[in-house]
Every structure is written in C-alpha cells, then in structure tokens.
Amino acid sequence: MSTNAEKLYNIIAKDNVKKQILFRTALTNPKAALEEICNIGNELNIKVSKAEIIEYLSTLEDEQTKLWLIKVRGGL
Image (cartoon, rainbow, N blue to C red):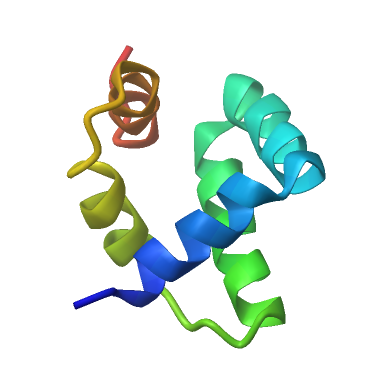
C-alpha cells in the first residue's frame, strides 16, 4: 500500500528543479525543507504531515537521507 508520503517523494524525486531547491534548503535549514515538502504536497493535493514524511524517509536505505533526518530531529 502506497502512502501519501511515498507518492509525494516519488513525484519530487522525478522533478529536478524541486529536488535541487529542497536539497539547497536542506543544507542550511533541514526543518524548512521538511516544511517545504509539506507545502509541495498541499499544492499537489497530497496531504501529508511532517511526521509521515519523517516516518517514510526513515524506511529508505539512503545514507544521505538518514543523515538529513538526524539534522531534522535536532542532531548533528
């Protein structure tokens, strides 16, 4: 079963412009990047919470994503 967070992730992953903007934001302000992901979801009528995004991303086997999640949670 696909979640809204997964659907949104797949859409963003295919959009190089959105991906680059989020990447640049995440480098300096990970929490703002998380907020922007939610905003993109709202624009696309894919309702998703920050918690759902974090939960979904934590299932990915991507080291960079895992490091970013640590920063979002206040680490590093």
